[in-house]
Image (cartoon, rainbow, N blue to C red):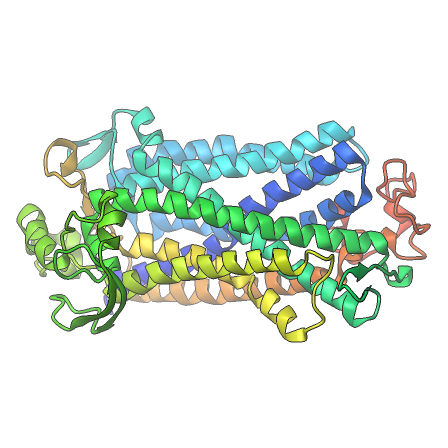
Length: 539
């Protein structure tokens, strides 16, 4: 294994892990803001409880996201210094805006939201969570601006072998960015919707299992309560509202990802035809979409790839919006790439061990082909499950089936899988380029960079291997911590975020013993309780 391969594994592992937190932070944060808005407007306690509980989980995920995200910035200097030299003038602007404007705003107002309970007026406190979560979305925009430039460079010129930005507006309005951003946001909502659905299903099932809620002869829920463990009638309202909100969000989000994904696909066919040809296992020109292809999908010449099931016209529609225009396949595109960008890497020291080697313009087809289908498949499964959940819970509760409960909980992973598969497909599919050339080889289209030229020349295999192993171990430990914290508070239900709801903690049974319905005893400590809650300071 060469240094380049190790560097790519390192960046892939850390980036994919970090991206697990990103969609949940964005989607769940905006949902929490909407729930608090509902509480401020209606005064209904179930919305306060919803805000506190889901806000707790949001904060845990946000903290882990910050910890893992910091590594991404450092990697550009550690393992990808040549890339940083090439694109630094371009990358610096959107990433600086992300840090100084978006992340600063996000952090400040999230801090105000955390510490502002019972200290700020309701509407002012509500504004802080909207500003924080809005800044999260803005942060995503700036980061995607940088990434979209790698997929489709604009607003620059090549000066002394470096990309120099000439038009920041072009970078921030890149057509690739304008479809990638809404696609990412709708994907984030899909993750948040599945998260709400699965956890809420679990708690409604627990109420059925413990005999708190029953159903009448028509299957309609008869809500019970057990105030001794914090599961009163309002608790039922919390979970049924959260489930149905989550399911509705998931369905709408999938529709959004489908629309934006179609637009994104058409741009990719235009800007990165090899990526999309590999994603479809389209070895030859044609209009048919592959449902199932077998063989050596990593083959460079496509000779071993056999399409077993295909649908005529669909590939043409995905690329061009019609059913008749043939799409160039891999065997057609490879000679075009070789003519435009060469058959071998230059015999230059900057390419290290890769210097002079033949260029493989075909991405790993197994990754692009199955990554594309996992993305669509998991997203579709999550959406169908959400629609079914809306129908099943129309009478106010969930079935008593333990198997269905487990399916709902594990279903939380489906939108995560769809988002991760989409991200892997996007990044792996542009190889062998780290900055992809534009389709025509004129003017700005001379701005591109092979991945082999981007790795740090002064970093040894041993150093890279040490960092890969270290990051992997640390990230696995962080994953265990995050899952453990999330599981702890999920099992505890709303009282894990609002212990004042339990008898003996200042709760009188109606959930509104404080001046604003928060359970505040008046001394700044809700219910005067003591807790081992790692985020107890927030409330």
